[in-house]
Image (tube, rainbow, N blue to C red; front, side, top):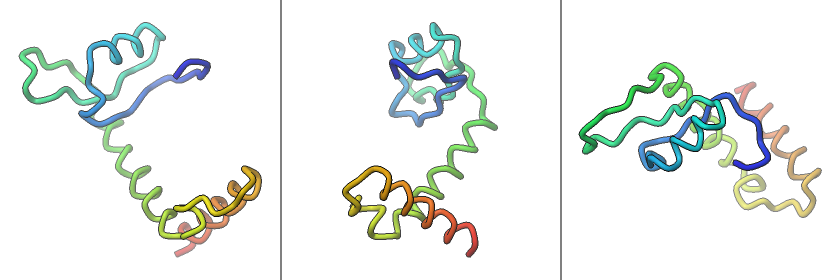
Amino acid sequence: MEGYDFDAVIGDKGYDSKKLVDYIERRGALAVIPPRSNLKEQRPFDEHLYQERNLVERFNNRIKQFRRVATRYEKTARNFLAFVHLAAITVLLL
């Protein structure tokens, strides 16, 4: 995450480590990572913002149905991005 500015980091329980959460909060961002259930002290997180993560994951899954996106068939970043845009438009129109 070095070199990037962000206001929040959204992740699943697999990213719940004290070291990562402390790093995110030191950078002045919100850590939207639900705590693991076996922790004695449960830390709060924004559940509404966490639910938005599901929309992003479902959208990524839908555009990966296009073989060229899933396998990164295009050689140049410009062409790959163009096909990602095309796949996204197709998904949004359906």
